[in-house]
Length: 133
View 1: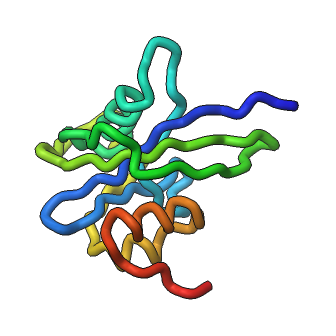
View 2: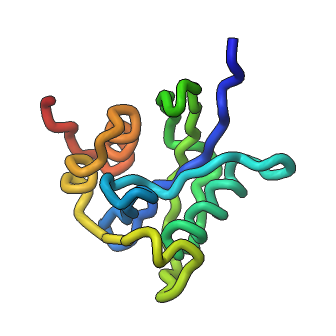
């Protein structure tokens, strides 16, 4: 059995809005997420991804809002998702040339995200419904 890859992600929140970024391919809307590197806690990894992928800094809720599994390249990924209460939004950030960042109301964020597990977490965090498939 292949090892499950561990990742951490953030749902960025500010002024009642959810921050999403485009995937590295630019084709999908996602939240900042990435691998949990050795020596980092899931929370530290989540904060690093928020900065690198979206240029966002803030206060992370201490406990994850949820987690979900997905398959990519024939491997299972387990993603711990934290809420990030954004306090700073950089004009320039490491992956700015690769990704777009956009703020939207929670219902629109739930609609734009394709990953079912992530969709449910955003809906639960923001207390909005998940549209019927």
